[in-house]
Each structure stands twice: as C-alpha cells, then as structure tokens.
Image (cartoon, rainbow, N blue to C red; front, side, top):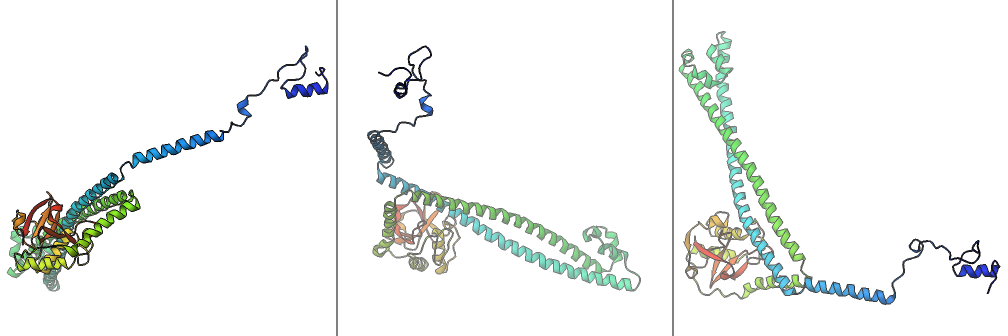
Length: 375
C-alpha cells in the first residue's frame, strides 16, 4: 500500500506499532516498555463497583446482626454485670467505712497522746527548773553539790543507779530527782506509743486510699458498661429505677407494730429520708450509704450504732425468722453482711440500695436475707 521509506508509509507503520525499516528490509515490531510502569491501573467498571459495595454492605449488616442478634439479651447481660459491680462497690464501701472508722479512732488516740506528751514535757521542764534553782543557789554560795552538777549534765536514771550519791543530797532533793526520772521514763514511753500510733495511722490512710480507688474503679467500670447501651436502653433502665422509687407512694406496710419505741422512732426517721440519694461513705443527713442510713436513723432515736453493717449486725439480739421481724428491726443481707436496711413491715425493707438509686422501700426477698437484729 505504501512504499518503503515514504513519509506516508512511516506514519502508517508507527501507527501500527512498527519501528523504522529494518536494515535488511521489511518492518519489525516496535519494542514496548513494560506496561505496568506507564499505564494507569484499569478502573473498575460501574457494575463491578456496585457489586463490591453491595457485598461490603451485606457484610456490615451481617456482622451487626451477629453483634446484636438479641438486643434484649445484651441489655439484660449489661444490667446483670452493672448490678454485680454495684454490689462489689458496696462491699468495698463497707470495708472503706470500717477502715475510715479505724482511722478516726487512731487519729484521736494520736492527738490525745501528743497532748499528753506536750503536758508531760511542760511538767518535766518545771521540775528541771526547780532543780536548777537548787544548783543556782549552791553555785552562788560557792559550794555546788557535785551530785547535783552530775545530775544536771546527765541522765537521771543513770544517776539514780549510783545509790551512794543520794547520801550527798537532802531527802527533798532526792525526791525531786526521782520524780524527774519517773517523768522522763513516762514521757519516753508516751512518745514511743505516739510514734507507733502515727505509723499505724499512716498505714491505715494508705489502706483507706486503696479502698477508695477500688470503689471508684468499680463504679467507673459500671458506667463504661452502661455507656455501651443505646440511649433507648439506658432510658428504659432509668425508667425502671424511677418506677421503683415512685412505688414508695403505693407501698403496703401492713399493720405490723414495732417492738419498741426506739425501733419505731428509727424507722420514722428513715422514712423521712425517702428519696435521698445513695452516696458511698455518706452518713446523712442529705445522702447515705446502707449502714449510713441505719446508723443515722437510730441516732435520731437516741441510740448510737457502729459504723459498718457487719458491726451493726452485733448491735442487738438476732432474729433468724422473717415472720418474727418487727418494724424498726435491722435486716442484714448477703453472706458477708455487706448490706443492711430497716424492716418496714409486710415483707418490706427500707434501705439505701445502690449508686444511682434513692432511699426507698423494696421487697425483703429481692436480696439474700441472713437475719434481723432487734436493737
């Protein structure tokens, strides 16, 4: 069609991928560079993109369905775990309350000992001042007793062991020396006791901090779990708690009669706090934990109770039959007695239940009852 070497033939050949004429004649295929280094990747067709997108979407739907195959079961599991964490937090709270009570007691003992040491040191200084007056008088007369001089520069215990030197002192001086020695021994003992109590106090404070961190950790974990629920699920759980709080208006306490005026007064005081929030470590008057409520209620009735539920379990005579309970009796729950409330009558207990809930009535059968205590 084109003669070899003409402009038209060259153009035609190049358009067909042929190089310039071969030295020996004829045309040869042009050597091409590797395609991958110069060509763009082939774009997927619209049809292929659609198929891939649909496949990915289906995978997401399937995985979502697998993760939420039973939303009600998931919500139930979360609530169960949250309730367990709240229960664990309450156990830790009662331990915290016990350590806090121990800390307060130790702090008082340390303060009393330090006051005692300060008074003792003042008395010792006065005794030393009196003995110094004797030495000053002797010095002015030019005849200070070597035994007095020895005492003032040394340890009176060591000095008093040298009984022979007492002959050089008058009876009054010897008595003063012995009083000073006794006071020094007493002061040293009180200082050692105070130092020991301070060490105990330091260890107790550390333990208190550990318990506090444990409680905060459990409550934070519970909140994390609650945050995994949908807004609708959280609202449903809160609504259930709100209904439990509102049910106090319709509770039937029957016609049980308290066993004593003290029990009646304690129950009446606790009833005045219905709706007050549960706060761990709180003892009223605006918020409470479980033993904080019972302790506060009985304090209003003129009866002091120990701080923790375990200690309050020994505050009176035990009643093991629910049918024998009377309004105002303390009621203990769980094997380790970490929860306590007040019996209100007709199988109902009034208590501070858990974080996020208010002081309210609840069936005594909602928790593992152990025994009652009549104060």
